Image 1 (cartoon, rainbow, N blue to C red):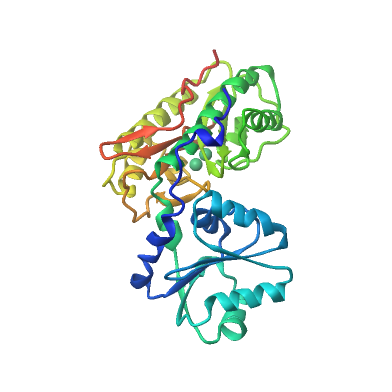
Image 2: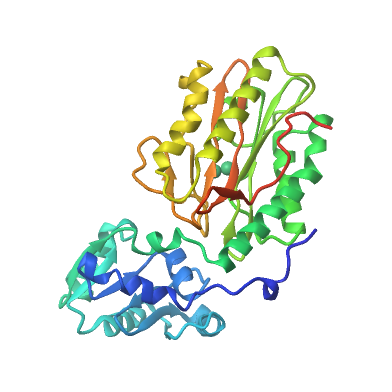
Length: 373
Ligand code: ZN
Ligand code: ZN
């Protein structure tokens, strides 16, 4: 398989996003928002460049960027059907001037508080926008990004399908004694060969004792008979990501390893079964955790149950003990419980799933049988 060409995906409603953002201005008490987080600018405009600041006012979208994106910015906004103005400044001073011009007359100017440095905030308050009251906001665009439209879901499904295919191609190699780093490289190469723009985050291949560290980096360790091997990776298609973990036993499991594999599989299934629009994330976490607690391994489940996925690999909503979020239809989340025991290795199973009114549907489909064929 290869990734379908962009033209075959259903369109994304990029142009409709700014008005949904504006609908939240009153609630947070701002008249405009300065978007400094690039992934949020991408979401609102389709612009994929590595520099730019977007100003969303009640009736305008102004993207200030630099000369490298003179042509690309306008083309990408037009391709996304976004009615916005691109202002290109060759120097930092020119860009400042353009930004100051774009916010002139705005009394309450929202900032993305989690993505503006202290230095920038001081500069904006003191020199750049002294006429405006700066209003710290959090999660304005991220909140909108949680619900995916049909076009976004199609891209994420394609990313997940690529990862499924890449794993199917590479997994038999685990029996041949490769190093973790070699397996990771093969997975990364395979997703790109199949048409992804790249992996969706740094691929994890963690074998034997390394598997007991949930975010181990693939290294020179050779995979040997008796290892549990945790493979956690994904693909990116047009900026949208997938996330999947499968655990393989090379050779025969010990009784403890066998039990770990069974318990985590049951925990993951219980978590997925708990997912439905209207369910609180904390209840999904509890569903996973209960199965692992009953097995006596509460202390060996070292992380939260899952997270939203989209343009970022980790986004809202978080599925964890401390989460206050409620699932809605068309949220995309992972369910990924694990058990980590240094003497035996690690087991984690993760799917990326779409929340529906009555349950969920998986985007990741790779087989979960831990044994190599
Ligand atoms: Zn993952
Ligand atoms: Zn994940």
